[in-house]
Length: 88
Image (cartoon, helix red, strand yellow):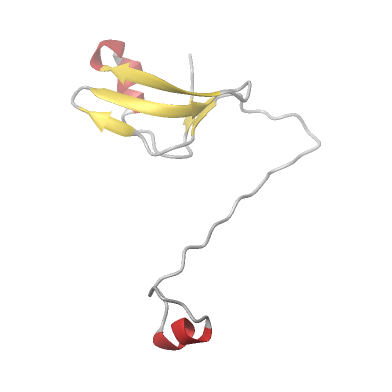
């Protein structure tokens, strides 16, 4: 949220300011974790969870988990944006 003074100083119309950012993590060492990562907020429904994942090969896609998936469904429904999906 912006104060009145901040809004006037920036000649802004709205009382808030969105901060957009991106970052890159780089290393000379090979990456240890090869798990898929959740890259968007999970979508939950009755007995199902849809996760948008960034796979180890760099591709992105959606994966649907249902109650029929058993333990995988129990893990998936507790994941959040940024979490790693351990595959076994």
